[in-house]
Image 1 (spheres, rainbow, N blue to C red):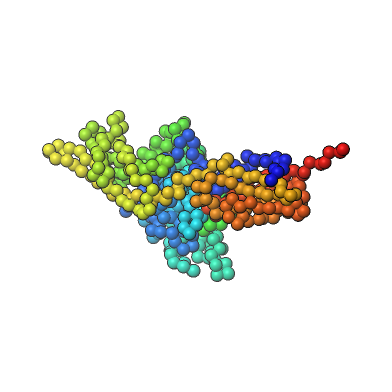
Image 2 (cartoon, helix red, strand yellow; image 1 turned 30 degrees about the vertical axis):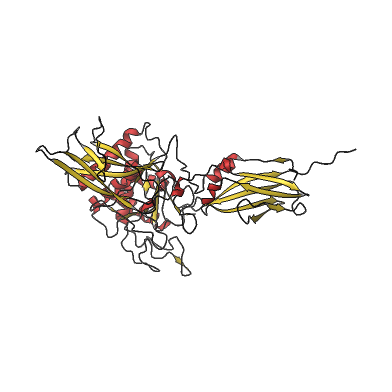
Length: 481
């Protein structure tokens, strides 16, 4: 075969803007190293929130494998939920933790029967995106129960429309509003407005909360102010063009700005984390307790263990996991804290680990504290990340026709769900599906006259698509004799 004279144009800005919306094993917010993600703390009495035992009908997604968030996201939600219950009492159906990120920082993917992103790609990257089920007054649904939608009417022609078709009549508006007030107050007072990015909510939920904020601001109740109302209107969106209008009938999507955690906002971050520790101490009744949280960085797991609650710093304090090797509290750390590495590797099923803290009781014995925490399943495919530079497209001319082929590393096949070509010519775009990976597709020169564009396309996890444009030039004109 004689290769034609090509200009293979990798339009990098275009390509990476498209790749940025894929579920491809890449944390879009990763910097010099992987983000440290925390598994959202299981609820306890008085904490103000709940979790889903499993994904529910109607798209309420929230299994434990996908509850990974950055530490300050968890602190923000837990503090606001606690303050809401403290102020207004327990609601009938509290705020519920849905999906955060996957453990690798990518947007969560359901692996079976074939990989498919649970959300639009990139929308849940980095541990700074979290879906929260609304405070509700009822879970009795028109089409199914439990129904976590804030509205009874979210059906059209007998099918779930994934958007409220009427008022948010099942929304616990006072508690939802108070939760938002706490969140916007922290954003304004600690972070100068720099923490909250965008918050998605259904139109009818947004309107109900705005009306409640207006009423409370007028009455000067519950910390509502016109400034917080203005912040809420600016940050909370149900914009159709940006994709926020649908699928938020049963949850609000919290997106934080990707702030520098160790820059000039570090004092605000530390204050927020201390507020969360104060919440845990209050939930423990002010008594000493073992605070243990699972974290993961680059899919390597560890447990942060801390003995807290009016306990003096003690150099003899030590921790272990499942009665294995003891590790003494970190020197110079005023928090009586150690980080225990959990050597597991990928695991197919959820497991548990018991964390123990031990110190002399002053009577010749040992004072012991323990806590059992869950280790979610970790699918090996989480280790796969796609480098767009490794996806190649080549075109060759054969007897006047064009042969086009996409190549990529075989391991990518664990995430690739579709391979096809788009031909953009004469004002039309036609799609040609590859029969199997690596298949060459032949385009008739008589059907497509150069110049034209062939987009070599690879779709990952059933979501958005990598498109590599290849420009096919006209054959060079014959030289005059």
